Length: 395
Image (cartoon, rainbow, N blue to C red; front, side, top):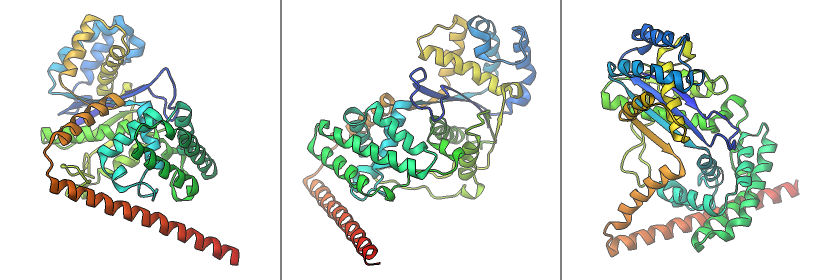
């Protein structure tokens, strides 16, 4: 299978552009090389509106309406699917705060379960976003992870932690206040324990919504591949000079043929193992719309999707096209609304399940053991630092 990928809402690491709150990536997925078999057909459709290639922003509503029936007719001859990945930038900013300060692998004051159990981590994310993280704090943390130097990154790291510490008082439950306070105080005291800086500029774009959407996209393509029982042959992505290296590096890492039989990772509390490998053996390249008929299709589809999502009108024929596409589209919604619905449904099943007294007792025992281990790690680290300080004074 082949995939043709385009995006909209492109602000890269400028995460706080109020005019573009969302970043959306869409993939047009086919069982044949669409660029090869449909090049002449797409050129004929473009010629109908006196252009060399279909660029929706250039064509506008009237010309899109004119070509939509021809495009729909062509797509109906193709057994195609679509995948749409939506990233809400404010939600990404909140997630970044959690990963920077509450990663239990780096912050010894964070309880193991608060970060490594996905549902608890997401609940923490929503509480932090609701009561602690302000737009100003989110911007400080974003400056931390995208800083050009280690010194600047650490400076913003401490500033962000101090600012959040002032707002912990607004968190409604005592236990969450304690977890957040302990974590932020430990972060302020031990900033050197955290990996906050990426030295290579091109790889710092791994924080961007572009990269997050790309990672989700590859998951979507892998799922489509498994449903169709066909390997992904090629992924053609619209050119994005700044992030192409990050995309290519990630694709090369997870698509290695030697990973084809790699065993999945079992995360705590998850029933389905996480597969390291995605789109195994596929190739990745970037192109312009002029070079790819598939990219022209997804450009028009994505333009229609964005206008509908922004409460802007599209024509009747364009609406028919988009409706047909959405009936064949899979979606990933990385947003407060989308993730919130998922967590609420999953936690509802957990909370409604029967729990015996024996299971509750086992759970309380395990939590007590993990808390004792956490306290021991914090104490051991303090002793280690005191020893280094004494050694430094002695020398």
